[in-house]
Length: 564
Image 1 (tube, rainbow, N blue to C red):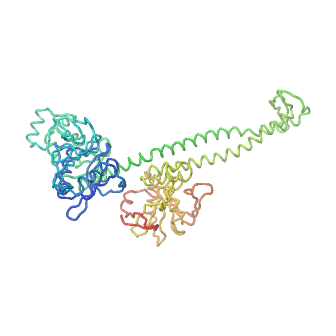
Image 2 (tube, rainbow, N blue to C red; image 1 turned 45 degrees about the vertical axis):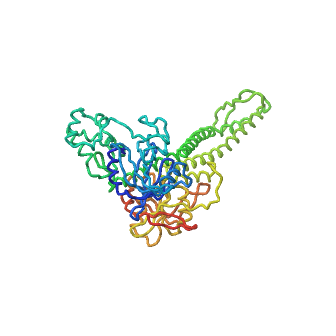
Image 3 (cartoon, helix red, strand yellow; image 1 turned 120 degrees about the horizontal axis):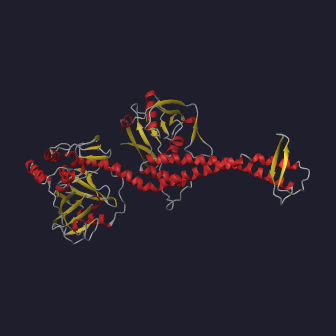
Protein backbone atom coordinates (compact mmCIF):
# COMPACT_ATOMS: atom_id res chain seq x y z
CA UNK A 1 0.00 0.00 0.00
CA UNK A 2 1.06 3.60 -0.61
CA UNK A 3 1.44 5.01 2.90
CA UNK A 4 4.75 6.65 2.04
CA UNK A 5 6.69 9.63 3.39
CA UNK A 6 5.26 12.01 0.77
CA UNK A 7 1.68 11.11 1.75
CA UNK A 8 2.62 11.48 5.43
CA UNK A 9 3.91 15.00 4.74
CA UNK A 10 0.54 15.87 3.23
CA UNK A 11 -1.27 14.25 6.16
CA UNK A 12 0.95 16.19 8.56
CA UNK A 13 -0.36 19.50 7.20
CA UNK A 14 -3.90 18.16 7.49
CA UNK A 15 -3.40 17.27 11.16
CA UNK A 16 -1.83 20.59 12.12
CA UNK A 17 -5.19 21.85 13.37
CA UNK A 18 -4.80 19.39 16.31
CA UNK A 19 -2.05 21.57 17.78
CA UNK A 20 -3.26 22.74 21.24
CA UNK A 21 -5.63 19.73 21.45
CA UNK A 22 -5.71 17.91 24.79
CA UNK A 23 -5.31 14.13 25.09
CA UNK A 24 -8.40 13.27 27.10
CA UNK A 25 -8.28 9.45 26.84
CA UNK A 26 -6.04 6.73 25.43
CA UNK A 27 -7.74 3.46 24.44
CA UNK A 28 -6.40 0.19 23.09
CA UNK A 29 -8.34 -1.15 20.13
CA UNK A 30 -6.10 -4.16 19.37
CA UNK A 31 -2.64 -5.27 20.46
CA UNK A 32 -0.94 -2.72 18.19
CA UNK A 33 -3.77 -0.23 17.66
CA UNK A 34 -4.55 2.80 19.82
CA UNK A 35 -7.33 5.37 19.77
CA UNK A 36 -6.36 8.77 21.20
CA UNK A 37 -9.39 10.82 22.19
CA UNK A 38 -8.50 14.49 21.62
CA UNK A 39 -10.41 17.62 22.55
CA UNK A 40 -9.94 21.02 20.95
CA UNK A 41 -12.24 24.07 20.81
CA UNK A 42 -15.01 22.09 22.56
CA UNK A 43 -14.91 19.40 19.86
CA UNK A 44 -13.83 15.79 20.21
CA UNK A 45 -11.62 13.93 17.73
CA UNK A 46 -10.47 10.32 17.58
CA UNK A 47 -6.95 9.69 16.32
CA UNK A 48 -6.09 6.17 15.17
CA UNK A 49 -2.48 5.08 15.69
CA UNK A 50 -1.90 1.61 14.25
CA UNK A 51 1.46 -0.16 14.32
CA UNK A 52 0.47 -3.53 12.91
CA UNK A 53 2.90 -5.10 10.48
CA UNK A 54 0.25 -5.20 7.75
CA UNK A 55 -1.79 -2.01 8.14
CA UNK A 56 0.33 0.51 10.04
CA UNK A 57 -0.98 4.07 9.70
CA UNK A 58 -2.12 7.24 11.49
CA UNK A 59 -5.32 9.18 10.80
CA UNK A 60 -8.49 10.57 12.32
CA UNK A 61 -11.18 7.92 12.55
CA UNK A 62 -14.94 7.58 12.87
CA UNK A 63 -14.81 3.78 13.24
CA UNK A 64 -14.51 2.99 16.93
CA UNK A 65 -16.14 -0.41 17.27
CA UNK A 66 -13.72 -2.33 19.47
CA UNK A 67 -12.14 -0.98 22.66
CA UNK A 68 -10.37 -3.41 25.00
CA UNK A 69 -11.76 -3.50 28.52
CA UNK A 70 -8.45 -4.77 29.89
CA UNK A 71 -5.66 -2.94 28.02
CA UNK A 72 -2.06 -4.10 28.16
CA UNK A 73 0.72 -2.55 30.18
CA UNK A 74 1.98 -0.17 27.49
CA UNK A 75 -1.47 1.43 27.15
CA UNK A 76 -1.62 1.91 30.92
CA UNK A 77 1.88 3.40 30.76
CA UNK A 78 0.78 5.94 28.13
CA UNK A 79 -2.27 6.84 30.20
CA UNK A 80 -0.11 7.49 33.24
CA UNK A 81 2.45 9.61 31.39
CA UNK A 82 0.58 11.65 28.78
CA UNK A 83 -3.18 11.62 29.41
CA UNK A 84 -4.16 15.22 30.02
CA UNK A 85 -1.17 16.56 28.06
CA UNK A 86 -1.57 19.07 25.23
CA UNK A 87 -0.19 18.76 21.69
CA UNK A 88 2.31 21.62 21.40
CA UNK A 89 3.51 20.75 17.91
CA UNK A 90 3.38 18.02 15.24
CA UNK A 91 6.49 17.28 13.16
CA UNK A 92 7.75 14.86 10.52
CA UNK A 93 11.31 13.73 9.93
CA UNK A 94 13.15 13.97 6.60
CA UNK A 95 10.10 12.88 4.53
CA UNK A 96 10.39 9.48 6.18
CA UNK A 97 7.37 7.62 7.53
CA UNK A 98 7.87 9.18 10.94
CA UNK A 99 5.58 11.71 12.59
CA UNK A 100 6.00 12.81 16.17
CA UNK A 101 3.97 14.84 18.63
CA UNK A 102 5.55 17.39 20.93
CA UNK A 103 3.50 17.08 24.12
CA UNK A 104 3.40 19.41 27.06
CA UNK A 105 1.78 18.92 30.44
CA UNK A 106 2.21 18.73 34.18
CA UNK A 107 3.71 15.73 35.91
CA UNK A 108 2.77 14.36 39.36
CA UNK A 109 4.81 17.12 41.03
CA UNK A 110 2.94 19.75 38.99
CA UNK A 111 6.09 20.60 37.03
CA UNK A 112 5.55 21.57 33.39
CA UNK A 113 7.41 19.13 31.14
CA UNK A 114 7.79 18.18 27.49
CA UNK A 115 7.62 14.67 26.03
CA UNK A 116 7.81 13.31 22.50
CA UNK A 117 5.40 10.67 21.20
CA UNK A 118 7.12 9.25 18.11
CA UNK A 119 5.10 7.27 15.57
CA UNK A 120 7.20 5.20 13.17
CA UNK A 121 4.75 4.05 10.50
CA UNK A 122 7.06 1.58 8.72
CA UNK A 123 5.18 -1.66 8.06
CA UNK A 124 6.71 -4.51 10.03
CA UNK A 125 9.18 -2.09 11.65
CA UNK A 126 6.38 0.16 12.95
CA UNK A 127 6.68 1.33 16.53
CA UNK A 128 5.28 3.81 19.04
CA UNK A 129 7.92 5.36 21.30
CA UNK A 130 7.59 7.82 24.19
CA UNK A 131 10.64 9.87 25.18
CA UNK A 132 11.41 12.74 27.52
CA UNK A 133 12.49 16.19 26.33
CA UNK A 134 16.06 14.90 25.77
CA UNK A 135 14.85 12.01 23.57
CA UNK A 136 15.63 9.45 26.29
CA UNK A 137 13.24 6.55 25.72
CA UNK A 138 10.72 6.12 28.54
CA UNK A 139 9.13 3.08 26.90
CA UNK A 140 8.16 1.67 23.50
CA UNK A 141 5.46 -0.59 22.14
CA UNK A 142 8.10 -2.91 20.64
CA UNK A 143 11.46 -3.33 22.33
CA UNK A 144 14.55 -4.11 20.27
CA UNK A 145 18.18 -4.31 21.41
CA UNK A 146 19.61 -3.60 17.98
CA UNK A 147 16.70 -2.73 15.75
CA UNK A 148 16.29 -1.47 12.20
CA UNK A 149 19.00 1.06 11.22
CA UNK A 150 21.14 -0.34 14.09
CA UNK A 151 19.21 1.59 16.74
CA UNK A 152 18.48 0.54 20.30
CA UNK A 153 14.80 0.80 21.23
CA UNK A 154 14.78 0.13 24.96
CA UNK A 155 13.86 2.19 28.04
CA UNK A 156 16.62 4.64 29.11
CA UNK A 157 18.36 4.40 25.72
CA UNK A 158 18.83 7.51 23.60
CA UNK A 159 16.31 7.65 20.76
CA UNK A 160 17.89 8.20 17.36
CA UNK A 161 16.02 8.95 14.17
CA UNK A 162 16.80 6.51 11.33
CA UNK A 163 19.83 7.71 9.39
CA UNK A 164 19.87 7.51 5.59
CA UNK A 165 21.80 8.90 2.64
CA UNK A 166 18.56 9.59 0.81
CA UNK A 167 17.51 13.18 0.17
CA UNK A 168 14.41 14.99 1.38
CA UNK A 169 12.70 16.10 -1.86
CA UNK A 170 10.93 18.97 -0.10
CA UNK A 171 14.30 20.60 0.68
CA UNK A 172 14.96 21.44 -2.99
CA UNK A 173 13.65 23.88 -5.57
CA UNK A 174 12.73 22.70 -9.03
CA UNK A 175 16.09 23.83 -10.48
CA UNK A 176 17.96 21.99 -7.74
CA UNK A 177 15.92 18.84 -8.33
CA UNK A 178 16.65 19.00 -12.05
CA UNK A 179 20.38 19.26 -11.31
CA UNK A 180 20.19 16.22 -9.01
CA UNK A 181 18.37 14.19 -11.69
CA UNK A 182 21.09 15.03 -14.21
CA UNK A 183 24.00 14.53 -11.81
CA UNK A 184 22.80 11.17 -10.51
CA UNK A 185 21.42 10.12 -13.92
CA UNK A 186 18.00 9.26 -12.55
CA UNK A 187 16.06 7.71 -15.44
CA UNK A 188 13.99 4.96 -13.78
CA UNK A 189 11.95 4.04 -10.73
CA UNK A 190 14.84 2.33 -8.96
CA UNK A 191 17.07 5.38 -9.32
CA UNK A 192 14.39 7.74 -8.00
CA UNK A 193 13.54 5.60 -4.95
CA UNK A 194 17.20 5.05 -4.04
CA UNK A 195 17.93 8.81 -4.21
CA UNK A 196 14.92 10.42 -2.48
CA UNK A 197 13.28 9.56 0.82
CA UNK A 198 9.56 8.85 1.19
CA UNK A 199 8.87 7.80 -2.42
CA UNK A 200 6.66 4.76 -3.04
CA UNK A 201 5.96 2.95 -6.30
CA UNK A 202 2.62 4.78 -6.53
CA UNK A 203 4.49 8.06 -6.98
CA UNK A 204 7.60 6.74 -8.72
CA UNK A 205 6.00 5.06 -11.75
CA UNK A 206 4.01 8.08 -13.03
CA UNK A 207 7.17 10.23 -12.88
CA UNK A 208 8.60 8.31 -15.85
CA UNK A 209 5.55 8.28 -18.11
CA UNK A 210 7.29 10.95 -20.20
CA UNK A 211 10.83 12.38 -20.42
CA UNK A 212 10.23 15.35 -18.07
CA UNK A 213 11.30 13.39 -15.00
CA UNK A 214 12.39 16.21 -12.68
CA UNK A 215 9.41 18.41 -13.62
CA UNK A 216 6.97 15.54 -13.07
CA UNK A 217 8.50 14.71 -9.69
CA UNK A 218 8.49 18.30 -8.49
CA UNK A 219 4.91 18.87 -9.63
CA UNK A 220 3.65 15.63 -8.09
CA UNK A 221 5.06 16.21 -4.60
CA UNK A 222 3.67 19.76 -4.55
CA UNK A 223 0.16 18.90 -5.75
CA UNK A 224 -2.81 19.93 -3.65
CA UNK A 225 -4.44 16.86 -2.17
CA UNK A 226 -7.27 15.04 -3.91
CA UNK A 227 -7.35 11.72 -2.00
CA UNK A 228 -8.60 8.69 -3.96
CA UNK A 229 -8.95 4.93 -3.83
CA UNK A 230 -8.15 3.46 -7.22
CA UNK A 231 -7.09 0.35 -9.09
CA UNK A 232 -3.55 0.67 -10.44
CA UNK A 233 -2.23 -0.62 -13.76
CA UNK A 234 -1.80 -4.06 -12.18
CA UNK A 235 -5.53 -4.00 -11.29
CA UNK A 236 -4.73 -3.96 -7.58
CA UNK A 237 -6.62 -1.81 -5.10
CA UNK A 238 -4.55 1.14 -3.86
CA UNK A 239 -4.81 4.73 -2.62
CA UNK A 240 -2.87 7.98 -2.75
CA UNK A 241 -3.24 11.67 -1.96
CA UNK A 242 -3.81 12.41 -5.67
CA UNK A 243 -5.01 10.28 -8.65
CA UNK A 244 -1.70 9.80 -10.47
CA UNK A 245 -2.67 6.62 -12.35
CA UNK A 246 -5.23 3.86 -12.78
CA UNK A 247 -9.01 3.85 -12.43
CA UNK A 248 -10.40 6.05 -9.64
CA UNK A 249 -13.03 4.23 -7.57
CA UNK A 250 -13.76 6.77 -4.83
CA UNK A 251 -12.76 10.33 -3.94
CA UNK A 252 -12.41 11.87 -0.47
CA UNK A 253 -12.18 15.37 0.95
CA UNK A 254 -9.33 14.55 3.37
CA UNK A 255 -6.51 12.01 3.61
CA UNK A 256 -7.83 10.94 7.01
CA UNK A 257 -11.23 10.11 5.50
CA UNK A 258 -9.46 8.11 2.78
CA UNK A 259 -7.30 6.14 5.22
CA UNK A 260 -10.18 5.62 7.62
CA UNK A 261 -12.38 4.19 4.88
CA UNK A 262 -9.71 2.15 3.10
CA UNK A 263 -8.05 0.57 6.14
CA UNK A 264 -11.34 -0.07 7.90
CA UNK A 265 -12.51 -2.22 4.98
CA UNK A 266 -9.14 -3.92 4.45
CA UNK A 267 -8.50 -4.55 8.13
CA UNK A 268 -12.03 -5.84 8.59
CA UNK A 269 -11.44 -8.36 5.79
CA UNK A 270 -8.20 -9.45 7.46
CA UNK A 271 -9.83 -9.76 10.89
CA UNK A 272 -12.68 -11.79 9.41
CA UNK A 273 -10.17 -14.02 7.62
CA UNK A 274 -8.15 -14.56 10.81
CA UNK A 275 -11.21 -15.14 12.98
CA UNK A 276 -13.01 -17.41 10.50
CA UNK A 277 -10.19 -19.22 8.73
CA UNK A 278 -10.71 -22.33 10.88
CA UNK A 279 -14.45 -21.99 10.30
CA UNK A 280 -14.00 -21.87 6.53
CA UNK A 281 -11.70 -24.91 6.66
CA UNK A 282 -14.30 -26.78 8.72
CA UNK A 283 -17.10 -25.97 6.26
CA UNK A 284 -15.00 -27.01 3.24
CA UNK A 285 -13.98 -30.20 5.06
CA UNK A 286 -17.65 -31.04 5.72
CA UNK A 287 -18.58 -30.48 2.07
CA UNK A 288 -15.71 -32.70 0.96
CA UNK A 289 -16.65 -35.38 3.52
CA UNK A 290 -20.27 -35.60 2.41
CA UNK A 291 -19.38 -35.46 -1.30
CA UNK A 292 -17.08 -38.47 -0.79
CA UNK A 293 -19.79 -40.21 1.22
CA UNK A 294 -22.28 -39.56 -1.56
CA UNK A 295 -19.95 -41.15 -4.14
CA UNK A 296 -19.55 -44.25 -1.94
CA UNK A 297 -23.32 -44.48 -1.37
CA UNK A 298 -23.94 -44.23 -5.12
CA UNK A 299 -21.48 -47.08 -5.65
CA UNK A 300 -23.20 -49.17 -2.97
CA UNK A 301 -26.57 -48.43 -4.52
CA UNK A 302 -25.38 -49.68 -7.89
CA UNK A 303 -24.45 -52.97 -6.27
CA UNK A 304 -27.93 -53.39 -4.82
CA UNK A 305 -29.59 -53.14 -8.23
CA UNK A 306 -28.84 -56.83 -8.88
CA UNK A 307 -30.49 -58.00 -5.66
CA UNK A 308 -33.43 -59.58 -7.56
CA UNK A 309 -30.96 -62.11 -9.08
CA UNK A 310 -30.34 -63.61 -5.62
CA UNK A 311 -34.07 -63.99 -5.02
CA UNK A 312 -34.36 -65.76 -8.38
CA UNK A 313 -31.46 -68.09 -7.46
CA UNK A 314 -33.25 -69.01 -4.23
CA UNK A 315 -36.57 -69.70 -5.99
CA UNK A 316 -34.90 -71.88 -8.66
CA UNK A 317 -32.97 -73.85 -6.04
CA UNK A 318 -36.16 -74.58 -4.09
CA UNK A 319 -37.55 -76.23 -7.22
CA UNK A 320 -34.60 -78.60 -7.45
CA UNK A 321 -35.55 -82.18 -6.61
CA UNK A 322 -32.52 -83.12 -4.53
CA UNK A 323 -32.41 -80.31 -1.95
CA UNK A 324 -29.94 -82.21 0.29
CA UNK A 325 -27.32 -82.50 -2.44
CA UNK A 326 -24.00 -80.61 -2.07
CA UNK A 327 -22.40 -79.11 -5.18
CA UNK A 328 -20.25 -76.19 -6.38
CA UNK A 329 -22.64 -75.18 -9.15
CA UNK A 330 -26.00 -76.10 -10.65
CA UNK A 331 -27.48 -75.23 -14.03
CA UNK A 332 -31.26 -74.90 -13.82
CA UNK A 333 -33.88 -73.78 -16.32
CA UNK A 334 -35.65 -70.51 -15.62
CA UNK A 335 -39.24 -71.23 -16.76
CA UNK A 336 -40.08 -67.51 -17.00
CA UNK A 337 -37.28 -66.69 -19.46
CA UNK A 338 -36.93 -70.30 -20.66
CA UNK A 339 -33.15 -69.95 -20.32
CA UNK A 340 -30.56 -72.03 -18.44
CA UNK A 341 -29.18 -70.27 -15.37
CA UNK A 342 -25.83 -71.17 -13.77
CA UNK A 343 -26.05 -70.82 -9.99
CA UNK A 344 -22.82 -70.75 -7.93
CA UNK A 345 -23.08 -72.79 -4.71
CA UNK A 346 -21.03 -73.22 -1.57
CA UNK A 347 -20.38 -76.97 -1.43
CA UNK A 348 -20.10 -76.87 2.37
CA UNK A 349 -23.89 -76.43 2.41
CA UNK A 350 -26.82 -78.32 0.93
CA UNK A 351 -28.84 -76.89 -1.98
CA UNK A 352 -31.58 -75.90 0.52
CA UNK A 353 -29.08 -74.12 2.73
CA UNK A 354 -27.69 -72.30 -0.33
CA UNK A 355 -31.21 -71.25 -1.29
CA UNK A 356 -31.80 -69.81 2.19
CA UNK A 357 -28.47 -67.99 2.03
CA UNK A 358 -29.49 -66.38 -1.27
CA UNK A 359 -32.83 -65.30 0.24
CA UNK A 360 -31.01 -63.73 3.20
CA UNK A 361 -28.62 -61.93 0.86
CA UNK A 362 -31.54 -60.60 -1.16
CA UNK A 363 -33.32 -59.39 1.97
CA UNK A 364 -30.16 -57.73 3.26
CA UNK A 365 -29.60 -55.86 -0.02
CA UNK A 366 -33.26 -54.86 -0.16
CA UNK A 367 -33.02 -53.42 3.37
CA UNK A 368 -29.71 -51.71 2.62
CA UNK A 369 -31.24 -50.06 -0.45
CA UNK A 370 -33.70 -48.21 1.76
CA UNK A 371 -30.91 -47.28 4.19
CA UNK A 372 -28.58 -46.12 1.40
CA UNK A 373 -31.29 -43.91 -0.08
CA UNK A 374 -31.95 -42.38 3.36
CA UNK A 375 -28.23 -41.72 3.79
CA UNK A 376 -28.05 -40.23 0.30
CA UNK A 377 -30.78 -37.73 1.22
CA UNK A 378 -28.94 -36.84 4.43
CA UNK A 379 -25.65 -36.37 2.55
CA UNK A 380 -27.31 -34.19 -0.11
CA UNK A 381 -29.00 -32.15 2.59
CA UNK A 382 -25.69 -31.65 4.44
CA UNK A 383 -23.92 -30.63 1.22
CA UNK A 384 -26.70 -28.14 0.51
CA UNK A 385 -26.48 -26.78 4.06
CA UNK A 386 -22.69 -26.35 4.15
CA UNK A 387 -22.62 -24.93 0.62
CA UNK A 388 -25.07 -22.29 1.84
CA UNK A 389 -22.84 -21.59 4.86
CA UNK A 390 -19.82 -21.32 2.57
CA UNK A 391 -21.57 -18.60 0.53
CA UNK A 392 -22.79 -16.81 3.67
CA UNK A 393 -19.30 -16.82 5.20
CA UNK A 394 -17.83 -15.25 2.06
CA UNK A 395 -20.25 -12.30 2.38
CA UNK A 396 -20.25 -12.08 6.19
CA UNK A 397 -19.10 -9.27 8.45
CA UNK A 398 -17.18 -10.26 11.58
CA UNK A 399 -20.32 -10.34 13.77
CA UNK A 400 -22.22 -12.32 11.11
CA UNK A 401 -19.37 -14.83 10.86
CA UNK A 402 -19.47 -15.31 14.62
CA UNK A 403 -23.22 -15.94 14.34
CA UNK A 404 -22.46 -18.70 11.81
CA UNK A 405 -20.01 -20.19 14.29
CA UNK A 406 -22.70 -20.07 17.00
CA UNK A 407 -25.16 -21.75 14.65
CA UNK A 408 -22.73 -24.64 14.11
CA UNK A 409 -22.27 -24.92 17.87
CA UNK A 410 -26.05 -24.95 18.41
CA UNK A 411 -26.42 -27.68 15.77
CA UNK A 412 -23.71 -29.77 17.49
CA UNK A 413 -21.21 -29.54 14.63
CA UNK A 414 -18.74 -27.62 16.80
CA UNK A 415 -18.07 -27.59 20.52
CA UNK A 416 -18.46 -24.49 22.69
CA UNK A 417 -15.00 -22.98 23.16
CA UNK A 418 -15.78 -21.61 26.62
CA UNK A 419 -18.42 -22.22 29.29
CA UNK A 420 -21.86 -20.89 28.42
CA UNK A 421 -22.62 -17.43 29.72
CA UNK A 422 -25.87 -16.50 31.42
CA UNK A 423 -25.84 -13.22 29.51
CA UNK A 424 -29.05 -12.54 27.63
CA UNK A 425 -28.75 -13.21 23.90
CA UNK A 426 -29.91 -10.35 21.74
CA UNK A 427 -31.85 -10.81 18.55
CA UNK A 428 -29.74 -10.76 15.36
CA UNK A 429 -28.86 -7.26 14.13
CA UNK A 430 -30.44 -7.19 10.69
CA UNK A 431 -29.37 -5.08 7.76
CA UNK A 432 -32.33 -2.74 7.24
CA UNK A 433 -33.01 -0.43 4.29
CA UNK A 434 -35.44 2.49 4.20
CA UNK A 435 -37.09 2.76 0.79
CA UNK A 436 -38.10 6.14 -0.72
CA UNK A 437 -41.68 5.33 0.30
CA UNK A 438 -40.39 4.91 3.90
CA UNK A 439 -41.17 1.19 3.82
CA UNK A 440 -38.57 -1.01 5.55
CA UNK A 441 -36.73 -3.91 3.93
CA UNK A 442 -34.95 -6.41 6.21
CA UNK A 443 -32.11 -8.65 4.99
CA UNK A 444 -30.98 -11.90 6.61
CA UNK A 445 -27.30 -12.56 5.87
CA UNK A 446 -26.89 -15.94 7.56
CA UNK A 447 -29.10 -18.80 8.71
CA UNK A 448 -29.65 -17.43 12.22
CA UNK A 449 -30.77 -14.11 10.75
CA UNK A 450 -32.86 -15.78 8.03
CA UNK A 451 -34.66 -18.00 10.54
CA UNK A 452 -35.33 -15.11 12.92
CA UNK A 453 -36.43 -12.77 10.14
CA UNK A 454 -38.76 -15.17 8.31
CA UNK A 455 -40.16 -17.22 11.16
CA UNK A 456 -40.27 -14.73 14.06
CA UNK A 457 -40.00 -11.08 13.03
CA UNK A 458 -42.06 -11.04 9.81
CA UNK A 459 -45.83 -10.64 9.98
CA UNK A 460 -48.15 -12.94 7.97
CA UNK A 461 -48.89 -10.33 5.27
CA UNK A 462 -45.32 -9.07 4.89
CA UNK A 463 -43.76 -9.91 1.53
CA UNK A 464 -40.93 -12.46 1.53
CA UNK A 465 -38.32 -12.38 -1.27
CA UNK A 466 -35.68 -14.92 -2.32
CA UNK A 467 -33.84 -15.68 -5.54
CA UNK A 468 -35.20 -18.67 -7.40
CA UNK A 469 -33.50 -22.06 -6.91
CA UNK A 470 -30.18 -20.81 -5.48
CA UNK A 471 -28.60 -19.75 -2.15
CA UNK A 472 -29.37 -16.22 -1.06
CA UNK A 473 -30.65 -14.00 1.73
CA UNK A 474 -34.20 -14.02 3.02
CA UNK A 475 -35.59 -10.52 2.42
CA UNK A 476 -38.75 -9.13 4.04
CA UNK A 477 -40.69 -6.08 2.84
CA UNK A 478 -43.12 -4.65 5.37
CA UNK A 479 -46.69 -4.95 4.11
CA UNK A 480 -47.98 -1.45 4.86
CA UNK A 481 -49.24 0.11 1.62
CA UNK A 482 -46.82 -1.76 -0.66
CA UNK A 483 -46.36 -0.21 -4.11
CA UNK A 484 -44.79 -1.67 -7.26
CA UNK A 485 -41.64 0.42 -6.75
CA UNK A 486 -41.17 -1.13 -3.28
CA UNK A 487 -41.37 -4.61 -4.79
CA UNK A 488 -38.69 -3.72 -7.35
CA UNK A 489 -36.39 -2.34 -4.65
CA UNK A 490 -36.85 -5.44 -2.48
CA UNK A 491 -36.20 -7.72 -5.48
CA UNK A 492 -33.00 -5.81 -6.32
CA UNK A 493 -31.83 -6.23 -2.72
CA UNK A 494 -32.69 -9.97 -2.74
CA UNK A 495 -30.86 -10.48 -6.05
CA UNK A 496 -27.77 -8.61 -4.81
CA UNK A 497 -27.52 -10.51 -1.52
CA UNK A 498 -27.33 -13.85 -3.29
CA UNK A 499 -24.98 -16.03 -5.29
CA UNK A 500 -26.23 -14.28 -8.45
CA UNK A 501 -25.13 -10.77 -7.47
CA UNK A 502 -22.83 -10.57 -10.52
CA UNK A 503 -25.51 -11.80 -12.95
CA UNK A 504 -28.25 -9.98 -14.81
CA UNK A 505 -32.00 -10.59 -15.13
CA UNK A 506 -32.07 -12.65 -11.93
CA UNK A 507 -35.31 -14.50 -11.13
CA UNK A 508 -36.63 -13.47 -7.69
CA UNK A 509 -39.67 -15.15 -6.15
CA UNK A 510 -41.87 -13.29 -3.68
CA UNK A 511 -44.93 -14.21 -1.68
CA UNK A 512 -46.60 -13.42 1.65
CA UNK A 513 -44.87 -14.66 4.77
CA UNK A 514 -47.89 -16.81 5.68
CA UNK A 515 -47.15 -18.90 2.58
CA UNK A 516 -43.72 -19.88 3.93
CA UNK A 517 -43.34 -23.26 5.62
CA UNK A 518 -40.33 -24.95 7.21
CA UNK A 519 -39.21 -28.21 5.63
CA UNK A 520 -39.62 -31.06 8.15
CA UNK A 521 -36.31 -32.68 9.04
CA UNK A 522 -34.24 -29.80 7.64
CA UNK A 523 -32.55 -26.81 9.22
CA UNK A 524 -34.81 -23.81 9.93
CA UNK A 525 -33.25 -21.79 7.11
CA UNK A 526 -34.70 -24.15 4.48
CA UNK A 527 -38.30 -23.42 3.59
CA UNK A 528 -40.92 -24.10 0.97
CA UNK A 529 -43.41 -21.56 -0.30
CA UNK A 530 -46.51 -21.27 -2.48
CA UNK A 531 -48.62 -18.66 -4.31
CA UNK A 532 -45.44 -16.89 -5.35
CA UNK A 533 -44.87 -14.36 -8.11
CA UNK A 534 -41.59 -14.04 -9.99
CA UNK A 535 -39.84 -10.85 -11.03
CA UNK A 536 -36.70 -10.68 -13.19
CA UNK A 537 -34.34 -7.96 -11.99
CA UNK A 538 -30.72 -6.77 -12.32
CA UNK A 539 -28.71 -6.64 -9.04
CA UNK A 540 -27.67 -2.96 -9.01
CA UNK A 541 -25.38 -1.94 -6.13
CA UNK A 542 -25.61 1.73 -7.15
CA UNK A 543 -29.36 1.71 -6.49
CA UNK A 544 -28.84 -0.06 -3.16
CA UNK A 545 -26.12 2.39 -2.08
CA UNK A 546 -28.53 5.29 -2.52
CA UNK A 547 -30.94 3.82 0.00
CA UNK A 548 -30.92 4.96 3.61
CA UNK A 549 -29.77 2.34 6.11
CA UNK A 550 -30.91 1.75 9.67
CA UNK A 551 -28.71 0.25 12.32
CA UNK A 552 -30.19 -2.17 14.86
CA UNK A 553 -29.40 -1.98 18.55
CA UNK A 554 -30.89 -3.27 21.79
CA UNK A 555 -31.99 -1.51 24.95
CA UNK A 556 -33.32 -3.53 27.90
CA UNK A 557 -34.36 -6.39 25.66
CA UNK A 558 -36.32 -4.26 23.18
CA UNK A 559 -35.23 -4.17 19.55
CA UNK A 560 -35.10 -0.60 18.26
CA UNK A 561 -33.58 1.14 15.29
CA UNK A 562 -31.26 4.09 15.15
CA UNK A 563 -30.38 6.17 12.13
CA UNK A 564 -26.86 5.65 10.84
